[in-house]
Structures are given as C-alpha cells and as structure tokens.
Length: 199
Length: 199
Image (cartoon, rainbow over all chains, first blue to last red; front, side, top):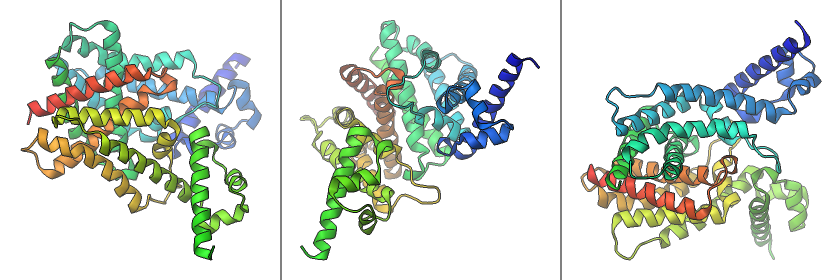
C-alpha cells in the first residue's frame, strides 16, 4: 500500500471502530486510546488522519445519517397518498432510531467545543433528510411557497423526532416499540390531515 | 444556626450556584470545585449534603421543571377552546425553552451513570407536565380512554419538544424565535384539528 492508501485504510478502520464503540456504549464512552488499540495503531496516529476525536465522531455521524437516508428513501407507500407517505417516513424514522439507538443519539447529542461550528457538509447532510418530508408536504399544501414548505418539513421532522426521542427515553420509562409506533401513526396522521385542511 | 439549618442553607446555596453555572455555561462545564469556591465551602462539604454531583443536578433540574410548570399553568386562553389551549401551552413551552435554554437543555441532556435510575419523584415531576396537555385532549377526544389520553399527551408534549429543540439547534442554524413560534402554532393547530376530526 502507498501512503495515501494506508491513510485511507487507517481512516476507515478508525471510523468502523468508533461506530462500533458508539453503538455499544454511546458517545460518552468513546476513548481515543481504546480505538487506537482496537485498530492496532499508535495513539498519535489517529491525529494524522483526524484533527481530533470530534472530527472522527462527525464522520461516524455522517455514516449514520446516510444509513437513515437510505431507509427514508425506501419508505414510499404504494398509493402515493401524501398522508400515507408522511406516516411511512415517520415509521421508518422510528424504526431506525429504535434499531440503532445509541448511534442515532450520538448524531443529536454530539456537541463541538465552544466556538467551533459544524462543517457545512454535515449541515447539508442533515438538511437532505428534511427534503424527504417536503415532498409530501408540497402535495398537501400546494398553495404554500417553497420556503414555508422547507420550514414546515423541518418542523414535522422535528416533531416526529421529539415523539421518538422522548418515547424511547428510559428516564420517562420507554414506551414499547409497538406502542410508540401507534403514537407516531396517530400524531402524524392528525398533523397531516390538519395541514391539508388548512391548505 | 443549628446543624439542620446549616445543612439546608448549604444545600440551597449549592443549588443556586449550580443553577447559575448551568444557566451560564451548560451542564458540561459544571465543576464541584467551582461550586465549592462560589459558596465558600470545602470541596468535601458538598458531599455532606448531596450524594454526588448528579444528585445536585437533579435538584437543579427539578427547580427548572417547577418553573416550567408555573408557566404552563398560566397558559390558559380566555375562550376555553381546546385547540387554543394546546397552542397556548406549546407557546409557553417554546418561550420557556428560549428564555432558559441551557437550564432547559440540562433537564433533557443529563444522564445518570449506567445502572442508576432516575428517582421516582423526578419522574412524577416530569409526568405532571404531560397532565397539562391531557386536559384539552380530553375535550378534543371525549370518546378516548384515559390511558390513551395519557399516552397521547406525552406524545404531543414530545412533538412540541422536538420542534423546539431542533428549531433552536445551532447545529442546524437556529430559527429566529418569531419563526419558531409560528411553526409551533402551525403544527399544534394542525395536530389538534386532526385529532378532533378523528375523535
């Protein structure tokens, strides 16, 4: 392997190891020392391929978002009804969160140190998720402009996120997944119908 | 002061200092050493009145929930319309979160070490907040049973929480408060109307 290949291979190995560690123990348990040990490199070698642990975490979180995006892209009901489409997206989101809880939490819980902002590529990665919600919204509210669709897509995405995050919260006694899914269906169906009504 | 009064006064002082620190710098910056310095006690004295820093944080978070509860109790529209009541509650929640962002985040971000669960008094404190949402829901869906009302109250609370938490998220470029409030009104009005429709 040449130098560039070795760098890439170390990068990939570290991302995979960090992803595994986050999936097993969450963000709080992530230690550079453990990762170096797992991929068999010196501790300092990590910082040849990532500026710091935060950059590595961002790379893991981007992979999580990409996996979620695949699931959302697959969530299209047969009929093409926008209410059904929104419900299918919300259920895909719920199932993804339940199946990959700690990886999913890491996306939202990770905070960069003060003064550093999230790179643009990461923000647009997240923004692409909202676009899935904007498509059925355009059908529900054809009279509304694209800016309002974008805002509302983010808000609906966030509403479902809230139902899922607090529904799965152990501090509040987590809802069984079946109960949570029914709640998601009830809330999203209601909001979609309510939005259509006012269009 | 007798011993009990001194203990109480130290407790109150530490809670006030921790609340101030969280309000200024968030949960992550909280250090026992700084708190001891601020209230003028020895570091070890903290652990005479709190088992650990987590117990102190729970006490701060309980105060935050109590303050939020006061604002929700005051959010009653004149007319008594359940849709308007839900919107008023959601706006009170939004305004509280925006005004006390870091204290509010601490309630949701705080995690106890593995294996320890949140005390019952804290869970029921949080549960009381959902009850505010259950009241207008009973009017919107008189044919639904109390268990479903309780579940749905938690879900609607969570939906608004999600809209607010991601709406104010700097990582996604925070919405200006006026924009966020309009989004909250749109989503909550839609969901309330949608729920009434299906009742």
